[in-house]
Structure formats: C-alpha cells, structure tokens
Length: 500
Image (cartoon, rainbow, N blue to C red; front, side):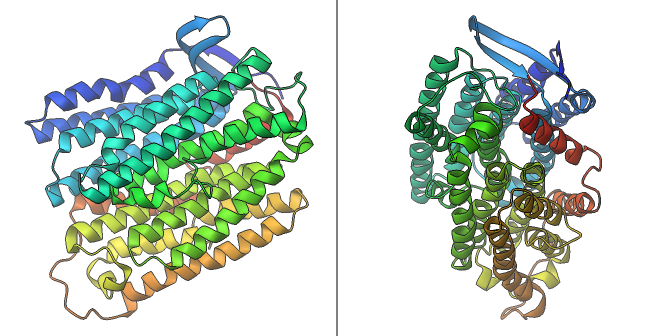
C-alpha cells in the first residue's frame, strides 16, 4: 500500500464544532420550541454535509488534518480524517439527522420536560462523537471520549426519577473509572514510545515488552474502551441506562456511545498494538474469548426480558461483541465484517429503538407481553421492526447478513471453527428472542382493542427510512457511502501495516 497523502484542512474542525456552535443557540431559544428545533436540525444537516465532503478524499487515500493545540512536541490535540474515522463519522452524523426529527415527535408526543437541556446535550454528544472518530492520537481520543461521558449523563437522568438517578450514577461510575484506566494506559504508552499518534499496524514496532507488561497494558486499554463497548462483565450500565428517553437509547446507546466503545477497541487492536503484537502475546485470543462469551450470554439474558427496551439492550450487548470478535480474529474478512457491523447494527438497532419509542408514545406500552395485535394498528412501525429483527438474526437480504457472512468467512480465514459456531448459535438465539415479539404483534389478538394507530409522521418517517436503508445496504453494501470499500481499506491498512 502507498503512504496516504496528508493535507491541512479546517473541515474536520468545522465538523466537530458545528453542533457545539448550535448549543448556545438552542439554549437561547428555550422559549421558542420551533426555533430550538430548527437549530438542532440545521446543525445535524450541516455536520453530515461536512463529513460527506471528506468521503472522496478518504476513498482516494487523502487525509485531512487539523491541530487544535500543540501542548509540546509530539503531544497535540489533532484531528485526522483517515478511512476509519470517516467511516464512523458518516454513520453517526447521518443517523443524528433522523434522530433529531424523531426526537421532535417524541418530546412533543410525551410533552417531555427540560427539552432545551435535552437537545443541547444531544448536540454536545454528537460533537464529541465526531471528535472521537477523527482523533489522530490517543490524547485527542481520550479528550473527546471523556466529553462524551459527561455530556451523556444529563440525558441518562433526563426523567429525574429515582431509577433514572441511580442509572446515571451507575453509568458515571463505570465510564469515569474506565476513563481513568484509559488515561493511565495512554501515559504508559507515551513513556514507551514517546509518541501517541495512531498508526495502522501498531505503534510499538520498535518497543520491547515482557509478556506480563504487555498483557497489563492491553488490559488497561481494554477496560478503558470495553466499558462503552459493553464487553461482559463491564456491561451492566447499558441495560440500566435504558431508563433514558428512547431517542437517547436509540442514538447514544445503539450508535454514539457504544459504537465509540467498539470504535475504540478497533483503534486499540489495529492502530495501537497491531496484529503482530496481538498474535505474539495471544492478546487476540483473550479478546476473542471475552467477545464470544459476551455474544452468547447476552443473547441468553435477552430471553428473560419482558421489557422491550431491556431486551433490545441485551441484544445490543451481544451484537457489539460481534465487532470485537471481528477485530480479535485479525483476518481480512473478519475485520471487514466487524467494521460493517458497526454500520449494520446501527441502522438495525436504531430502527428497533425507534419502534419501541413510537409504541410507548402512542400506546404507553413497554412490555412485550402487552403487544398482542399491535402490528395491526401500527403496520409501518412493526413492519420496520420486523426488518430490524430479521436483519439482526442475519437473514438475507437485510444488511445484518452481509456483516455476519464476512465474520463467518473471517473465522474460516483465521482457521478458527469455534468463533464460527458462536456466530451460528447467536443467530439462532437472535431469531429466538425476536420471533415472539413479531408473532404477538401480527398473529395474536389484543385483549382490549387499541384506541390509536400509528405515531406522528415525525416518528414514523425516520422509522421507515432507517428500515429501508437497512434493506438497501443489504442489497448493496457500497450504496451511497461506500461503507464496504472503506471497511476494506481499513482492513488492508491494519494488516498491511501502512498508515499515518
């Protein structure tokens, strides 16, 4: 592979800052709901447009760079738009647009309190997520990673009930502790290398380690990013955080927060340690065991949940570890499959959470046992739910099949049969815990007739769009945004060891 061309550009900076710029405008518009929502939508559209402008360069191997502040030689807050960063930023910014529309319908439908704080915190979270995506080094990554932690807290406790406050405390205990460990790992890395820049293939090419030292450093990194990635046993904050409003669950706990976690896992595996070091010290085996156990255990726990959002939460815990497993296998197809699952799980799971929110806003039902016949009065919503469920079970032609196929192929490329068995079993378990929901919705009659039909168009349109997008990406994974090509570029750079 050729060395990427790096050029200076303000676009990464603008992409991070646009939603931060919207925050004071949102706060000043607290008396004018329409104006407040306009700033939210405008910022989301501009952010996505700026990220999209970076796509041609990423496909061509050109990397935009912007430095906020150089603390000292070799230590700076710097943004770089490599293929992996653009890949993640595209899906995060794209889904924020739809979530912004959906959120308007949601907060209006429930007449939510403190809507201004809600939209302002959402904007900060998306700025932090794009900062994570474009972080050129560990220092910048940690900086935005911790901003995301703090900005998410008001959203988790939004309802301000006793349960919400408890969930928020649990979230902070887990994520702030993880942040401290990540800072320690970053400091140790700088002491070893004198550099914090991410490099495809790893940063430790000329370093020497004892097996115990490298294992401890890896565990520090894994704990630092593994909390947001919900790797068991670091996962329990995620189901607890489902007490948050459904749009928060949808974007932050199915896309931004948890995907920042698995994004971090891939950064650590491919751009900090690298394939050679991972294999030399069997770190990939440790990671694969944790991922495989999480996939199966989370799927089994999902069966026990009657609350719809709780079942979706445990499903998320399992599916995040598909991405971790793809990184651990370190084969070309497994890396492509893991990266594609960042996108595919995002579109599928956000669809399912959107559906759960629409059901709650329109019919105030949260339990699966209460959903008999709801598909007859909410056909668009439950039709999209079926698409999401089928996709997560890995059934074609929905996009979840593509990433699971690549992961299975990657397991064979790596000569590992057990991960393949885990993938097959988990697909059956996925079908097992989603099928009863679909059966109840369409084939059982309600005990009491429903008084209402679909939710407002502000909610139904985003639901249909994310469901349709999941289907289209299943038919052509390179449609619109070239996610497959970007994933292949990232996989080749990690395994080839060429990159900035």
